[in-house]
Length: 133
Image (cartoon, rainbow, N blue to C red; front, side, top):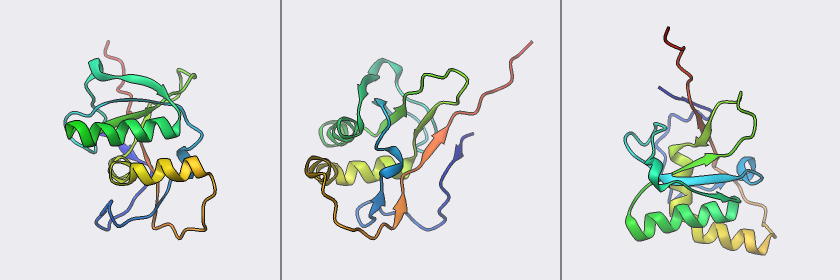
C-alpha cells in the first residue's frame, strides 16, 4: 500500500478545485502512463520520459490525457538513493489534467493573482518492503 501526504475525506472534484501547486513547482519530474489503481504507484515502465520541469510536466500530463485518455504518473526525481520514491498523488494528477492549459499560462505569465486555494498538491511515496532472506 502507499501512504499519502495529504489527507482529505471530502470528495475531490478537480474541475472546481483551486489547488496550490507551490510545493511541487521547484521539482524535476519524469512522466509515464499510469496502470492499476489510481491511488497506487504503478506505471508502464516502457512509457517513462523526461526529465521535465514543472511546466513541462504539466503539459505532458495534460496532453497525455487529452490525446490518449491515459492517466499519468508523475515521478519526482531525487538524487539521494536513500530517499523514498515520490510521485504526485491521484488528486494532483487529476487537477493538472483538468487545468493544465491554465497552469501553463499562469507559469508563462509568472504574475499570480492572490488566489484562495481549496487544496494543496500532494505526493504518494513508495513503501520499501523488507528484503527476503
